[in-house]
Image (tube, rainbow, N blue to C red):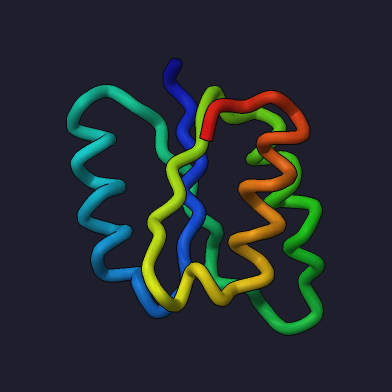
Length: 84
């Protein structure tokens, strides 16, 4: 299990970046979504990253709990039988 998809609210990016660095130090390949550019359809990149993940870690904060994007990500992963 090497590819880890990190699902989070953008408001929590500082904590997520710390987690990402820790996972890298342990030999994992964590994926976080890049900052979207205007006109970019980032949904395909996110779907592909989830599909290629061995597992997903959801950084659950009050902001993440209210995010439709975070909900989409973990529910999509569960539908693909990826451990969340």
